[in-house]
Length: 272
Image 1 (tube, one colour):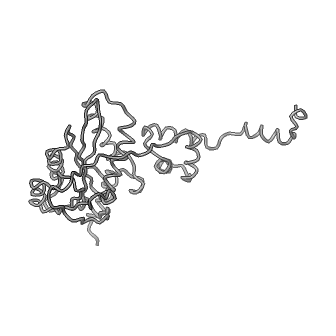
Image 2 (cartoon, one colour):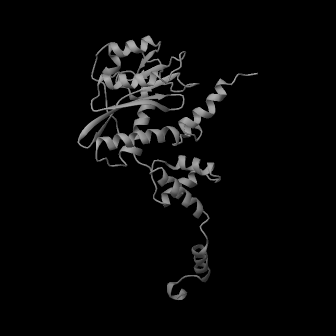
């Protein structure tokens, strides 16, 4: 057979030995597969690498990426979001953040926006508030209209999370809801400074843009919803997952709540 195939004897036995050899990444592949499907395809190779390392595997992210390619495991592409700008309604607030989306402690900088979903033949609108300290969603409201009441309810829920002396800078785009007198009056009464992105510049609120992209790729486009109520229940479940379970590489491989829990005590601890 070797003569007929014009194959060297040594080449044949070398290839045979490779086929019989145990795959040294077999256990890692199993772990990658479990992690990927546990998070419903939401984790890419960097997050999976972080989870593997937390589980005791010493492995490079490039190796994980290569193994995921072999297993045909890939995360999804991010879509665009609903735009809430409708032209000039009232004077816009200045851009106080200037793309500085880092905070040294909770409730120093908040950001918000509105995004749209098409569910069961209807449109729904989500209005969340994110704490830029750890990217945690601290409040949100859902409505079938992008109304002023949608953002006022969101604001009321968020303000309940503040201590008496906490006055975060609150950032948004120039959507008409954020430029209404009643909304701005509520912020002013609580001593909260309002900040707004420049007109037509999505990068000025990229932290919330990023959350919406993740939400739609990891949650909305991976599921089918037979009713609005089913969507609302699933959305609440996902946001809890996002806050408590889903790790972020920018937070050292911790979820937003894990990061806040571990690091807030260090911030509050007095120095000797």
